[in-house]
Image (cartoon, rainbow, N blue to C red; front, side, top):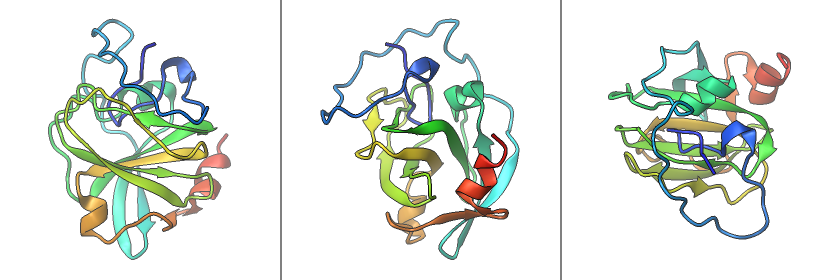
Amino acid sequence: MKRLACFGMMAVGMTLWTGCGKSAAPAPTPAAGPSLPQRAQPRLPTLKLWLGAQELVAEVAATPAQIQTGMMFRTNLVATEGMVFVLPFAHRAGFWMMNCPTPLSCAYIDPQGVIQEIHDMEPFNTNTIVANSDNIFYVLETARGWFERNGVRPGMVVRTERGSLADTFRRRR
């Protein structure tokens, strides 16, 4: 099975992790090929997010190609910036760090915008970090340690300059 890249990823072609109650075994590292991104994508449109009192500017990855590429090949990340992934439907997401040289943290977020879990990710690690919840609709990646440094924890709600995550993204679909 191929997996989508950087931001930890979900399975390719939106054949996503679905819960059967088992932990996923680490998958072998896929060889780079025409189906995997070969370079960083251009900066994506941004949106201001609030996590409690903390403000973050996040690029929005919403198309399959944007989601697949994520933060691959990027060598720096401003401490107050990140990337939010808007997934096509709620599921048990799994992300990895293929071709990601920058250490990141990711928050798995449910359809209501509530952070369910936060994970630190190692550069270039292709072991998938699978969510414990099968109800993940958004994933937010930041510089590693940002959530901890800013007191952001599971249970907190993520809001945008346009309102809730659901109001911001589900209207456009």
